[in-house]
Length: 521
Image (cartoon, rainbow, N blue to C red; front, side, top):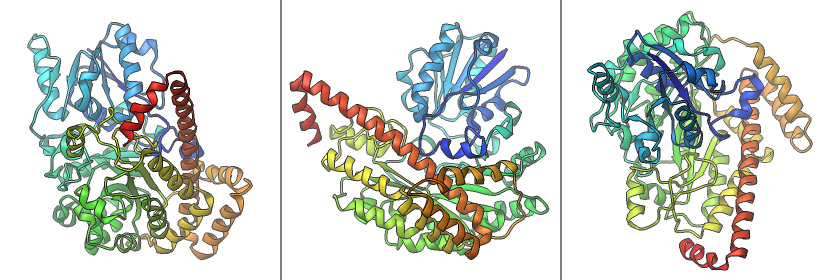
């Protein structure tokens, strides 16, 4: 059996880092960990190929070779997934689909032959058993149970060229103990964190190391610190020991802001090589935090918590949201000031969206406030809900936040704020040729640019004389700013096109104006 595994393209988004990756001649950050895991669950006798369309085009030869096509995707990959499925069907291939996109809206993909939903460790074996027993496979395989992570296999890294990517991926846990109403993690994976063993984590790190990898590794857990006791007593000490004598291997992950309350946890994470953590801050408006169930962020000084994480040697990247029911027009300036004061350079700000299956989606659906499926892009300025705030005020306020925060006038001083507070553990590193080349590209694209150049050179010289060990980080963050501004320009151009089309439609059909106004109210 020949199995072709296809990972659809990501659109140009905040998290794609596409324009930043150009500086180091990479096309995408992370490999498709879900498909790599699925590969390890398939029969060893089957031939398998993986096409990551963010790196390689899907060719006719690929499809001709395949007996079946497996596809996995997230919401933001919806459009390209449709194209891949249609092309595979035009070749007469059976299409098997799974992953977050299909688990939440499989009814929207009528061309797919079989869906492997929820967690593949549980549902894929059911599909394989039907094939092996000569039964006609069902169209949908799903379950309400959760997988035992101790039984999850090592993802099949042999399917990829690891050097095509900027960062490798590991999943240590699934599930999150918190109750944020807009988040679909708990809807998909539950509230109780389920963990791999320390031995599993080390085995996955060993796989990458044997293949020659020594760079960044992203622990893709939605909340890495869901079980702090096990981390502190077992996993982090084991990683610290494993890293001895090895150059490189810095780690990135996602966690809740209450990590700031545990100095020992942060110390061990820093010693283990964790340099960056994504935190869902969401908003400085405590009333809105209570509204969405983000109780772990309330009753605390969020700036102080962020500073504690920075002081521990872990840079905070963060997600922010505007458009909660309790937000007023004052939130836009409050958000700008909060992010600027926090020193969070990589600040992803989006309009509130309601993913299918979440508490928020169910509430707004009952209130008649769901417009359509969400885009899956948290920072494209779109929303699938009818907000309480006037939509035009919300849209303009959102654009004000983005245009301000990513402008050189605000971005470069924010980088300095971070560098002053950030005290990473010294570790043996490596300098790569593509990173040296990236620096010269920054000089060309930012250092010689009118308006931006003076901010860029001020940062460069300031970092050289005040914190030379952090100079590479200063350059990297300047590159991130380039990416954010470029994506913002693309999104605003799309907005302008949509606005023109809407205006033309109203001129042709004046009756369209009234329903739009009513919906906005």
